[in-house]
Amino acid sequence: MTSLEEIARSLQGYDPQALKMDDANAFIHRLVAPVDDVVTLPLRQCQGRVLAEDLVSGMAVPAHDNSAMDGFAFDGAVLKKGGPVSLRSVGTALAGKAWTGSVDAGQCLKVMTGAILPAGVDTVVPHELVRVDGDTVHIPAGLLGVGDNRRLRGEDLQLGGVALSRGQRLSPAAIGLAASLGMQTLPVYRRLRVACMSTGDEVLSPGEAMREGAVYDSNRYTVTSLLDRLGCDVIECGVVRDDPAALEAAFRSAAAQADVIISSGGVSVGEADFTKGMMRKLGDVVFWRIAMRPGRPFAVGRIGNTVLFGLPGNPVAVMVTFLALVRPALLRMMGAGDESLPLLRAHSQEPMRKKPGRTEYQRGVVTTSPEGRLEVRTTGNQGSGVLSSMVQANGLIVLHHGQGNVAEGDLVDVMMFHGVV
Image 1 (cartoon, helix red, strand yellow):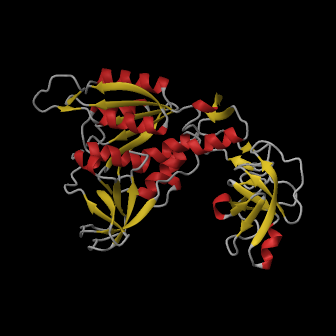
Image 2: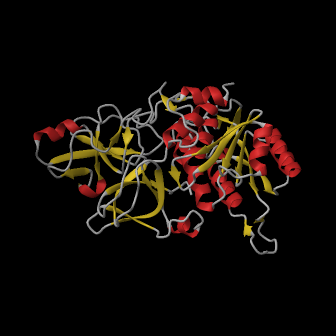
């Protein structure tokens, strides 16, 4: 197991007091490793899980050339003459049943969607485009090309091809694809076990009576909801008071049960905080001042074999550090491939002040202008305790490390929330 000191030495210019986001992510990437336990589950239980082996197709999908719609199938060579075509219909082919007759020159076959196309037939004209007179089908000129409205054998999946790749998170479409191959079960990595706690004497759980100077614990509920979205098994550890014995018991218990511990509060640089001392006592932990806003204080390390992330205490900083630093690490531990959140480019609707030398994440609302271009505006007050601004936003405006002030109309990157927050 690589120590934190060894990881730090491998990063050129590593400075825990002014750490760039790229370096923080590189450090964490080397710290964490994928779980290797595999379970086999029914398809209905595989939503959101990570595939542990390539799924190789044991068949071609579709298994035969077939019709993409209801209509009349024929040899498209007759279209090369360029004029209208009249063909004699010789029967009807239904989906799921092979046509046993033949379709000769000058003939066509009425077909339903999915019907197997017999030999010599490669083109389908939709029934609404033709005129039928008894058993004669009249096809106007210029409507079709050879091969139109035909699904080719194996055009979806080739026999022996990789249908789904190891490390792929299984979406509804992926599960449907597996079902189309006749799969009943799939091998997936086990769920990641993540313990979540908040720390501090000032933190109350919802339902407790409010007192002066106290705050209700939103962080734990935010983080556990984000973990639910990722498909983790969440171990809720509640609020832990600033008491050395209670903190030690909570961290030891969490480390014995979980692959990952996520705590919030108590990691600010310079604080005489019980939480920081307990982390140092129990594990190999480093405390960073990351060149980012919000979310500068951050702790990362291990307690035994359990990875530890110590997030800031402010609610928005918790969400931003989770999305920017913790989520990629958890996905790697889940065995998933790279699932970096895509950055959209949008025109800023307002100027934004920004000093080079840190990465800033501003809450934004992306809309489409009447001209069809993407535009983004901030939600206003960007304080790290203004959690309502995250509710109003549909993404984070990412102002990169070397970037300066933004003028109205400038293009900026936006990390969208859809499907994540």
